Length: 358
Image 1 (cartoon, rainbow, N blue to C red):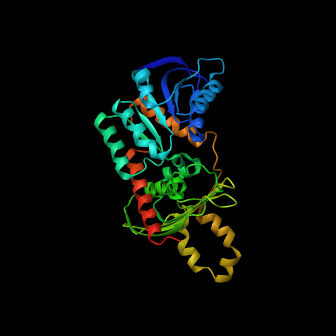
Image 2: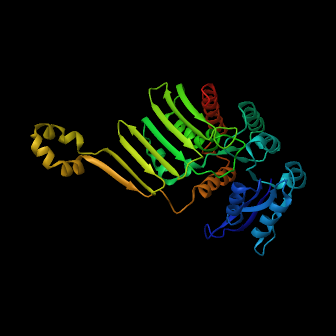
Image 3: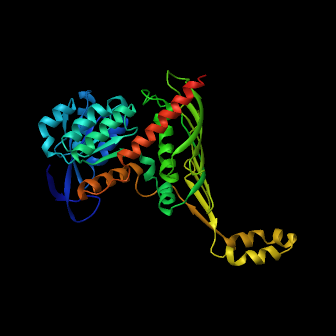
């Protein structure tokens, strides 16, 4: 692998080693990855790979902007033959059915890979990807981008221990990712988040859903019970008129409510004065408690309001984390095992839905 020295552009003012990167798949999501990497001070987009040469060529020309455009290849084999030893990392954003076919040879060539979610089209293919990464000792991360949403990131960093989580992720039809159902397309974001927070195996699940627009489910709802007693309720749709993205979590510490459509979140927890004032509150008459409820709530509860959009887009943060892991040889934030766990749960949910198909 090679690392090319240059000046860090918009990201910072000091010199930094640019990483040679490629993006495989130039559809909707792949083109976003490519545009971010094309403007990233810590990376140089060396190549685009897509069977649709016209689309990839148009994107390469757009990204050139007076500089040398990325080279366009038709397949991963051509990419590896031409510049495999020069690449520091690759983003795989092809349809899910091709994830293993594309990611495995890259990992076998010891090239770090960020593969978009879901990790693979099946658990068998996911295991092939993980085995290739482990055998070659190569970095593998999965594009569960919701972990990089500022509001959710704050919740993860604060270490809440959830007892109940409720997620709604409803969207109008986009007619993309029709090779998978809504569980693997949208719900899997929330499944990964829940697994990363609860940190316990799923003991029971009850799911229902059905197809409206095609052969795969477009609506799905599931209730999860974990071995540690936590519960979760998750609903996803890609056949709604209006988008809805909400996340609620309850724990012994308090609760968190995030509304991504309104860009607003709030957490309410027991404040530092609660324990000291419990005896005082117990002695107050009901009439006084009612009259002073707002004052008392402000004194004993810790309320934090938050904007959910930060200065950095989640996909930018995800790519920064990947580049940082490649540069420093450290651990990734979303591991291949994380991606497999989310996929395994998604497979269980789809199986349960098929048992009670509409």
